Amino acid sequence: MTQDVIIAVISSGAFFTFIQYLITRHDKKNNESDNRYQELKEGLENHKENIEKLNQILLENKKENEGIKQLLIGIGHDKLVFMTDKIARRGSITLKEKATLDAVFKPYSAMGGNGDGEAGYKYCITLPVVSDEGAREKDSSLLREDMGINNK
Image (cartoon, rainbow, N blue to C red; front, side, top):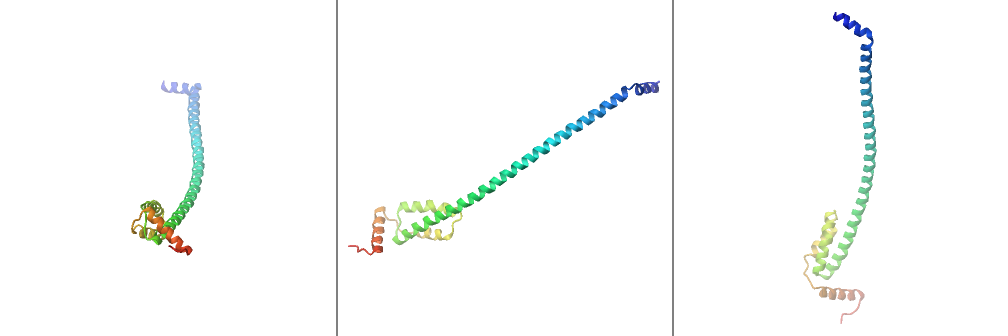
């Protein structure tokens, strides 16, 4: 009897319709999975392009920043040499000059400035402190001396 029922179901076409349904359902799931995979793949490719663009921008910014850094070191070096030469020649330093030397030397040194600026800085901060007026008088005297004008 069971065999008769099985044979009846198989021969009725319902069985084949059910099998066809299962196959179609399986194929549809594979297609959806393939579509999702393709979407993910395309999304990752877009991200890869964006990451490459960002990397290029970062490299350009790094080059520009390195140029700015070198320029700032050069300007700091120039300012330190100018000030320390003037202060060393005078043989004394004002409190304003001392503060300015600190303000220029610390970032100059932190950015990798060389020892020329450091040597002048270290020497000048050990000099005796003089008033602004005393420094102006000494600078004027040195200028007159440079120009060959008598100090009478």
